[in-house]
Each structure stands twice: as C-alpha cells, then as structure tokens.
Length: 279
Length: 264
Image (cartoon, rainbow over all chains, first blue to last red; front, side):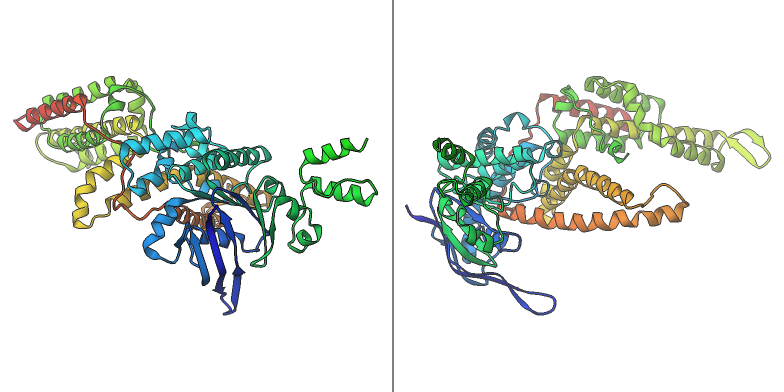
C-alpha cells in the first residue's frame, strides 16, 4: 500500500516573547499508509496538535517536508486540494460549527469547494446518515450535546469527500459514551469507506484497535509500532508521560504478583480471556 | 436569567407567509414602510391596514401576538404624541389652558405619527415572526449581491451576521457559567448602586471577551480547514425561488401603492 502521509525531518519552531526559539516539533519522520488507522499519542505539550495542523496545510513546517497523497503542503497552489482531501475535527465542539442549522453547517465545506447545488444536498444527506444524525438535520447546533456536535463536525468533514480525516483530540471534551460513539463511527468509516484516519489523543484506550501507534514526546517520535507493542511497553510510556490502558496495567501487576498472565493484554476482553485460561 | 433573551422573535410555522420567498418578503416590507409615510388620507391607511391584516391572517399568527410587538414602544408612542400635540400650532385652536394650546393641526399630526409608528412596527413584526434570522441574512446576501461589483462585501457581511447568530446562545451559556463561577468566588452583581453594579460587570466581561477571541481564532482555523476562501466560486445549498404566491403578494402591494400614490 502506498503512503498517504509522509513527513521528513519536520520541525516547527516559534520564537517566544522573550526571544527564545522553541521547538514544538523537532525532526519528525512519520508515514501513514493509505486506508490505515493511525493513532498519535502524547501528553500535553508533546507537539501533537501542532503536528495535526501540518497535515492540512493550516501551518507549514519551519523545517523539513510534509507530503499528503504525494502533494507537498508547502506548494501554495495545492493548498485547497490538500484541505479538500484532509478533513479535520478539532477539540472544542462549539468552536468549529459555523451555521445556525445543522444541515447548513455540513454544507459549508462543499459550498466552499463550489460543488453544484443538487450534489450538495445529496452529500449532506449521506454525511449525516453516516454519522447517524439525519434526524437532527434541521436542529440548531447549540441544542445538541457535545458528542452530537462532534458527529456534526465529522459529517462536515465527510461532506467534502476527504481521503483522510484527522481528529485532533476530538474526544477530549466528551463524556465516555460520546467518546465511544465517535470512535465507533471513525472505525466504521475507516473499515467500510477506506478513509485514512489519524486520531490524535491522550486516551490510551482509543489506540487499541489502531493499525499503527505513534508516540510523540517533546516534539519527537519516541516510538512507533502496533498497539500491542506500544501499549505494553511500560518503561517507554512512562518516559512519554503516559499511562498504559487499564487492562495492560492490570496484567502487569498480576504478573508482578506471580500470576502467569501474557504480556500482550491491552483490552479488557483479552485480559478476561487470559484470566479464564488460568483455570 | 439571561436565558430569556429571544432574538428576532421568530415564530416557526408552515403558513403561506412562512413559505414566501424571504427576498420578496423583505422587499415588500421595505416598500410598505416607505408607503406608510406617503399616505395622506384615511382611505390610504385603511388600505395599508387591510394588507397588514391579510398578511397576519395568512401567517396564522394571532393579531394579539403581533400587537405584542408594539408593547415595548408605548413610551415612544406617548412621548411623540405629546410632543406633536403641544408643539405644532397650526389651524384652529381646540383647547387652551395656561401655556398649553392644542390645535387641530397638532392633533392631526400627532395621530398621524402614532398610527404610522404602530403600522411600521406591526409590519416589521410580521416579517420577523414569519422569517427566521438565517433566512433574512440569506435574503440580504442575495439582494445585495449585485453590489459586489462596487466592492461591497455582501457575502462577508452575511457570514458575519450568521456567525453572530450562531454564537449568541453559546456566549449566553458562557456568560451564565462565568457569572456562576464569579458568584462562587463571592462576587455579587445585583447589589449596590449603579456604579458598583457596573463595576461588578468587569469580572464577567473580561473572561467573556478573552474566551470570545479564543473561539474566533479556533473557528477561523476550522473554517480554513474546510477550504473557506471567501465568497468567490462558492455555491449554496439552499436555493430561493419566487413562486406564484410571491407574485400575488407583489401584485397586492403594487395595487395599494398605486391606490395611495393617486391621491389617497
């Protein structure tokens, strides 16, 4: 499979008021395969949100290169092509909806792209159906819950027919149920529609089903691999300021207590199966 | 407490008036407002009132509800009425007492202004009751579009208005939250004199503004990420089209205009 995202030696620096140069990102090399589900983990200030903005040409790297689907994000002529193929969902559900009615908000992206009117209507219906929000079509966004607003934001990205969706801490402000729903929708879009997903988060649990997990720390890639490799590596996670998911922690402690549990448990189900096998 | 603010007082419905093209509604309202100030006889007023009543009837909103719109205006009504009655001294004197003198001309003028004000407010109330703020914004954008040739930012203005409408409830919620947070820290907003109360608003307004700017920043980013690049080459999902009922309405208003302009 070809790469959808490729970054090479990406740095992003800014000068603080005191005149010091700070590096939010410092030499990041990442590739994400087309149609895959990648999770980027990192604690606050690890540079993960800065990285998200580079994927949509919202910011340009101060050093190095970012290619999206073969297009260099620094190429000003292709900015809108890149933004059209990379949908973004941000953290605060209140600050990314533009219109006073749900369907008009979803139509905002296609309208900007200059899609003909009958097709916009079609795309809006499809996008709202995909996030299971069609019956809220005529509602006002401020009457919806946070999770519902985020689903509208996803629909807004979907209506542009993107090849990739980047979720920048999109679940951070939601309750557990809303978070689960968003994850279900994103996973389905990845599996059924083949949309590449980059999920940026600090919730370890959201990484368990990913194809690829990347850990960012202090603007650098600390580690990358499969969820099982990453989430069971206690020492590395500790260094990144992250806690392993509950199941992995539990398995670790049981093992320390002398109970022979495999190290590979990262989900509750795996842990339960392991424990059941003991008898 | 601030939850009670209603804006534009839109009354959702599916009547003939609601379904009229907002552009036509807007233009006809404008025409009627101009017309009110051209009326010189009772028959003219009767014609305008008839149009108004017809509109209210078709909107399926009770006359009482529409007249509620005049309530906040009673002070201005009484004030202008008194001013006119005492300061215009034309024609026959009807009543004289101490330094006050009521004349026929003054009375006619005062009644005229009062009737005009009531009609003006009722007509615009019918518009805002049957048209959502969003529709009005959209209609304005489309009506002002020809002016973009003269570099008038029609699309940008409409976008600003719709963002303002979108964020009013959000900011109202936020104000509520900030007020509660400051109350929990011992602030009080409804005690003391005017100056003290005005000063009490500072701890609400400062965080509100800070957060509003932050929101603006994030919204701009989100809009950019959705390929927003101004009004150029933009298409719209909603189509507005004039239908038979719009032309009937136009016909009625045109008829009244002719009636009034030819001497009534």
